[in-house]
Image (cartoon, rainbow, N blue to C red; front, side):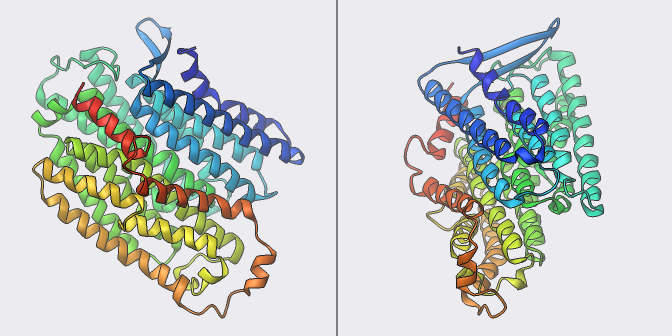
Length: 491
């Protein structure tokens, strides 16, 4: 059973994917039920694995497909951090997407690739070796492209071409780095210390640049971020998936694996790789925030916010200190909860009121109070206002900067928080404090209230608030990140 559970977890989205592809549009209720049902099954499997790993159980499955080369799925605390986030957000995004699309065109295709994307993200999390990681990493690229171009118009197709250009180039760099590294080390497993002595220091630096550069294309590190704002041509559920659940998180997660499970913190420090990467992440944090301030389209502003916020994870990993890695890892969860809430809100605004620009937000908080309350909680969390989860991430990252002897990190975090306030507070001011003369009346809005479109944002906003309020508990995202930090620094 311990060998079977990782396979079941990875394959659990495959069944609803096949069902979605096979069922015609007239059987949409059955398709929707299958998608929600299997998402609940996967959530139950994750709970079972969380209990097992917390109790010291080990879960591993392997299958050799050529001599010396095999697929390896392995469940550890780091994998479960990513899997738990993606599984929970898969469920709420499925509910949201069903309400958002209603009876729109090409939904069998959408939900089919949507589930394949989740399967790929799960495989990335559970990969126990570099080659397994790369296989699922490529599956993620191929399964998300149809989602980016779902609308089929010229803008979506152009966004899809840009997305493939960046991600396939990144994959080529990553594959070159993997082949070059394993030519001297043999197959690299994440749970074993890799013997890197076959390569010189300069070679290891070049391989590190190739691998992190390849992963940085999905993580949207500058100058590899250009695909992300253009991908906002996709529907809101796809945007939520790209920004909070799958693509950018896969890149950031891969960088964490390279630093801690491929090279190891001692070698990263000895080669002088951590601080330059931390500076690149910091530049991305500030650049993304500055670009976000200038955007007038809501989704574009959120897109540049993602460019900034995901690099907090890379910053924490690259500082190679206990508090820093805890801050980076917990932000993987916190950013996902907050960002998906923001995109749920943006999608609801566009779907119910046709609002896509910031100057259209006047008074919308009084017309859509639940949606905008959830949006406000997430926005304040992104700024770093306590007690929302974003404050916890920034607190630990600041401590990590001081602990690692890099006090300039405090200035980066302070500057980023100020910029966050500059691009989020005007939205909240317009929504809650400006008059709403051009919007439908409260009675008109109440008469048509699609709860499946409203509740997902409320649930994820409550989770972001709860993750901050309950951060001191052992089962909180912070508690789990501390457990991972102890595994890394106190093996």
